[in-house]
Length: 363
Image 1: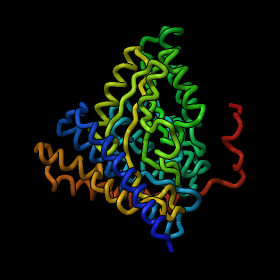
Image 2: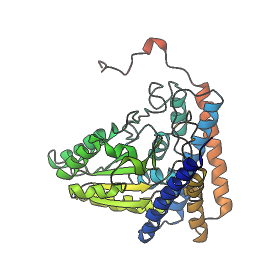
Image 3: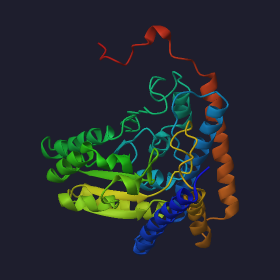
Image 4: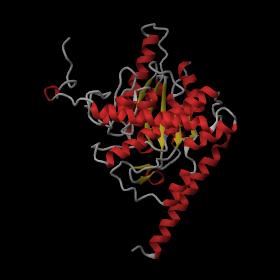
């Protein structure tokens, strides 16, 4: 039983946190969101819906004992993946993810059946069944990997951005204008790799987007308790870098910020740090009972569901009807169900090939 003092303290902390959330979001009212046409709006909705329904199916499979290991879902954060990757060029630009990588892979164009197969550890997975949930990779779709440890992907993304500039300036490849997006969470912004890579990226004017998915919680540590300055985007100022704060629950706001950053990067003007204020609707992983976050906080953010917000915008602008969106959802549900059937019937990796892909192979 909690004491009256403990209960009061918990309520006070919740009020402070909700107030901080609301205050920061209210300051974002003057953003410059992207203005979608009908085709773009439908594509955004389709991609976000695929991410949401895919993750819901993963939870179902996990709790039914069909999927194993650590599985970290992306529910609630879909506007970030869709907003950034949807503004970039598929199979031209590059992407680095985290251990919460399923939806990044889908947005990058990796087929749902290949992602689901990887989660089941099958040979047909995008990492040939060797990576699992946290280590998705696809050379074809320029996905440079998911990473189990925080911050691991940022130096890799920096290398991809350096390659782009080196090819253009040193090797004189004029068509080398690819941009790299590095995704990571708020907890990563307190480790050395984050600052070291920001410094080098600005020093060399590398074409990279540092995308902070600030979902307010680093596992069970509240963001405001873990950093001296909770406004991460301001840290760009220390390096003379452009920083921008956006509503990470609004895909059009994220897309607008990404488009501006990509334009600067392709023009040789260097990197951008984008902080997306978002929220995960599920626990840290499917093994997390999610008892640390208050019901009031969850309710505050559930009302900002990015899918519902986009639907409201598209229908109010008469770009698409609710009936059309429901039809898209049915198509996505079928695609996700097909991916499960494909994965379940696929072959396991051969035991004699256990060490394959670990070392370079002779041709």
